Length: 110
Length: 112
Image 1: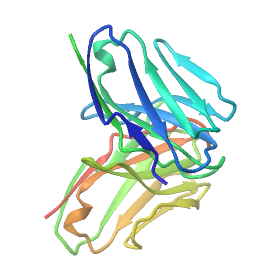
Image 2: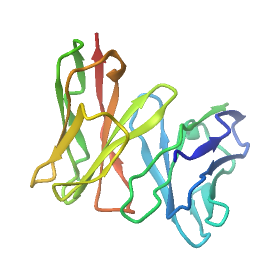
Image 3: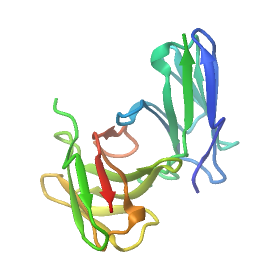
């Protein structure tokens, strides 16, 4: 039931783009994205509900394809502050528990 | 607005002992979820409480239990501690699902 995230880790230079994928073998109700910096608690980025919508947060956006049971997080012109571990969480119903993937470690080099 | 608080922040226990961790959610939030985080395993869901009722449960043994009080504060208890229980325990509060969760700083539990 745990969603699968890819890649597991990525190293970029400042200004480069990154895509983090999240896929599930089960039908999804929504997809949640969080970022956790080293030594800190996870911080909410965005939620995508059914409907294939794409949402954005500054230069970070995401898409949700419910038919493919996939979501992708897009980081454009990455900044040093984007470094951290990104988690996707996938509940299967409105009140269902949020199961998180193992995370994708993103490291941005100056 | 005060954030989610967790106490204690650090705890060292011996195998076989039991431990209680506390979480105070953001004012007005009725949902509290607990997660165990270990290196390489990400965030493992323990349970979620909503309005004093356990609404969801993860795949952890019965040694892990929790409760929520009428003021939404939550506690989790781990009995008969094992070495493998050493982890960062995070709680997160939200208004309800599917709203965003706000995580506390966590309690670092070390079992020796």
